[in-house]
Image: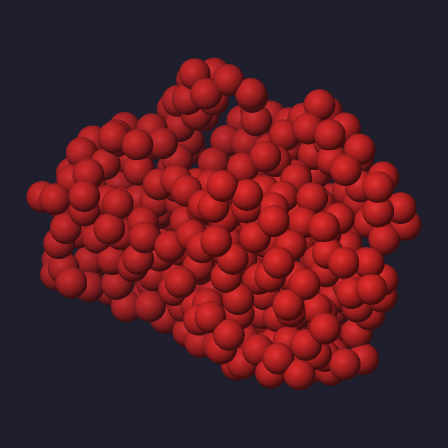
Length: 378
């Protein structure tokens, strides 16, 4: 098949500036090419990469984009300009065009260039009805699937749920749980919607005799240009961290894959306290943590329930209480001393992550693409 993948205007590929969707589709592109498909990937142009190159069997075309703006209106305007440039750079003909951009599906009104598959990487906000002409809407979780159908019931037959894959392990075998440092890890954007302030407050409320042997490590970008909450929020977090002294570490973002993998291998418990009720669509970071043998503790968002089961493959805390930091602190107070439970759940989580390997998830996409090229629907 000829498969064209169009990623967004704001992050480059390879994902040297992060981005869960960029990481996932960069990996898919390589896997599709490895299986003999003709793959073209369009992404934001940056000085670090040539505008055109072939890398690992994938043809890369890079188009002028922009840094992520703070204004939503400006973001949509920049996405439109980028989508117009992309439309002019698309291959003449593809079997499948996959995109997570807002405007491009609306600019491709027919199947002359290929069957359009919209990767719905965010919860829909009224735009699904504009994609009625597209061949497929791919959702990464059941939560997003239900949201799409709720917004546009007539499109139900076009919606297919396919999860994100786990990342591959670069360093071989998983580090045994009991040999790891007693580290609680967060990896992701340093933004209020991610609940990082809750984690810092909760860690500060864990009784000293329990917290004494543990460190909290918060990894990710706070700068707005990387999707962070900005300087004011970062200063708020620094103030919260000061109370814990050396027990809290905030090293900033880690974009290098091997260095990021080592962060997971050096932690026992991964905490992802997201508050983004309409923002989290899957939870790549918790799955990545499970892949590397961490026990995971997440907020009670619907998307996490696709792969986390309470006290079996992970843990939940109720982030909707009147005092969510206290609820999280109570959960940490219970979990941190119970090494047997943490080790058992970490092992089960690792086994669960095997179901999300890149080859297995890529096969789901390729099977669906094949159905579409045969003018069938599932």
